[in-house]
Image (cartoon, rainbow, N blue to C red; front, top):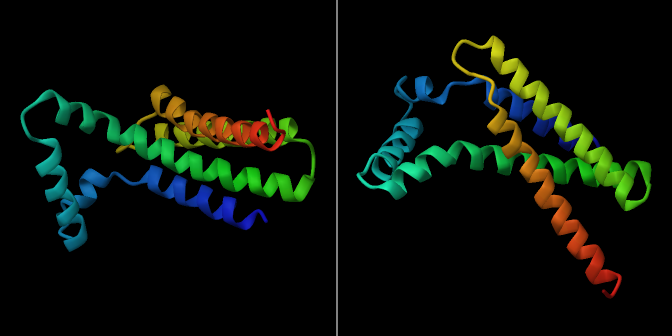
Length: 143
């Protein structure tokens, strides 16, 4: 059960280690297309495009850690078979530690940096998972 969360964690650390701005300039066709789309959507005049450009990184963090939290929650639920609150707290703790280690390891990379806002974006994915599971639990309890 833990193979998918482990694989996804390794993927997050890999993505966190790569500076995609440098990789885009190396000539890969797919990366050039991505760069051109990014330029088209993000380098236009106007406030909306600038706001979107600033928040894309946080959206990536949010989605990555929402997926990770879902995978870990599923593994914890099936492996430990504890109550909902325990499973959720353990999931939050595991994802928090992974997010912390991910941000700390970026301190040692010259092309990346550690950001408290990235950690908040990571944890917001867990928070959304909590809201979704809590809403589902309320619906199944008949409240």
